[in-house]
Amino acid sequence: MKYTLFSIVKFSKDRRLFFNRAIALTIGVVLLLLESGCFLVRPLESLPIIGLDSNGQVKKYNLGGNFRTHRYGKLLNDIKNQSILRLESIKSASPSPWHISQVSVGLGLGAALDLKVVGVELESLIELRIIKGE
Amino acid sequence: MNARKLIKIKILSTFLTILILVAAIPLLEAFAEEQSFNVPDGWLTSAEKEYALLQSSSYKTFGGNGLNESESAYDEKSDPNLQKLKKGVHTMMNSTYNALDEIKPKRNQQWHVGSIAAKLGVDVGGSLGLLGLNGASTAELVWTRKERSKSAGELPQSIKETGVHNILVTKSMSEEDLRKEIAPIVALSMNNGKVKNRFRLEKNLLAKAKEFHTLISSVGANPANTQWRFYQFQLEVNVDASGAVLPALSVGAAMKFCFQWIKIKESDANKEEVTKTLSSSPSPLQLFVENMATDLSSYEQMDVQDTQYDLDFIKIGIGIGVDGEIFLAKIHADVVGFLFFKRVSSGVSGASMKNLITQGGHYLLKDDDSKANINLASALNVPFEKFPEMKSNSANINNRSGVLYKVSRAAIRKGFKRASRIARFFVRATSWAKSSNWELSEIGVEFELVLSGGIGLVTLQKNSVIELYFVKRGA
Image (cartoon, rainbow over all chains, first blue to last red; front, side, top):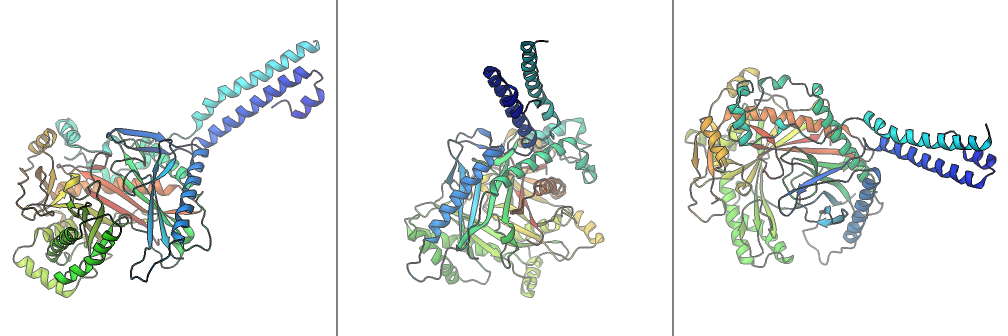
């Protein structure tokens, strides 16, 4: 870019001209960032989701995009933390030859394309298999 | 040039720069790697497609079941569509890793995420995606955390062994032993309140356990000269809230049980037993197992050498007919159990392999009586007969209507060849992406079968008949 912020501030005596240049420069920088984002991110980020709805019709979504996959990851992490918190709080009431060694948490897409806990085998997008032990 | 003019020129040049940048975006995108989420049309099969192919002039070229005879020499690297799909799968895996990398382990906790499983689905049009709604899966993926999977003694969780209550059954078990094995499972079901009628649940589970016991007792040793051995049989039982048994793979079951028989080792007693059995007439299950172990052995190498994955086991969904005949179950509700075959290290010599693969015979495939199926069967001279009506109320025997088609073993063997090639692609494509925290430890690819022996990827509305499971070496 031809103009730096310094040059604009230093050499612009006309306040209106200064703002015009600043806006143009901001738009240019934003577009440059978007452009580099498109170029760098698009080939690396795309997460198509497919499945049948309750009427048996094929539905497709795309959860792609750098920010969205990170957001899903954070949701996954939150649900994992909540699940483990509950499991850690379980205390055996009496001695038993049986103990729970693994809990599977099925996570599916909610109405707002967020994550919700669902049955493991039905509509689960991803399944967290939480196990006990080191 | 006065100052005002200069300012105008400078503003104009700034907007021009912006315009050029905007125009450059599509140009830059054009340089981005081309990717696709569509599997080749030839990887999907149906009776309609096979019949259309049969009618076309290219049928002879494609060897009878859509399988090109020269496929063994096929190089996927030279196919631009497959390269695009490979990049698409790579992108999908990278995006998944970006999400999984957000899962942070915490110290000083007894519980932790041992593994994460997800499925891929394909619609009839060939679109591939992560399966996020209803529908049959095409591939199943299991990731384990890198530092966890390296820790001693921890094995990756098997894809199909979650969400069900396993009941281990051995041949030597008496009725009392079976009752004892079932008792804690019944107690657990009553305690969690999912089943209300204890008596009915206990009675039905015991009946299923006895049927299962009878079935496995008819299986002897594996054939001596094959690379594959039958090592596990699972019978799934779904029970509703009243304790009644539902057809396998039912939706809405209150509890799901799995009777599991695992062959630990080939004992001498087993060998004697099978010799006796074979001298009279082998049971349908024994015959099925022998044929399948032999046919699977017609492929010497199904590993993916350039990745780090080995074909670990093959899972086949079966149904059981009125007279105890074993059939490959195509219709979802017909599946009563799964046979697992594992490859043994000792190979078979080339000479004996040739003898094996020239053997004749057939498998029974149960499917519907659609026009496409009947047309295809008639065109290929595949014998078929209507599935006989049910004679008893046993839940082991399915009473759904359908047709039993006699599919030649030669056609099935060709189908396996195609399946292994498609599965290899998925293994390569999914294992291409890497993460610093997670590694793909298991990949299962599922296939459906048509009566011509044609094998294709399972689509959302279908049911898988054969599943190939690859496991990472050393995982």
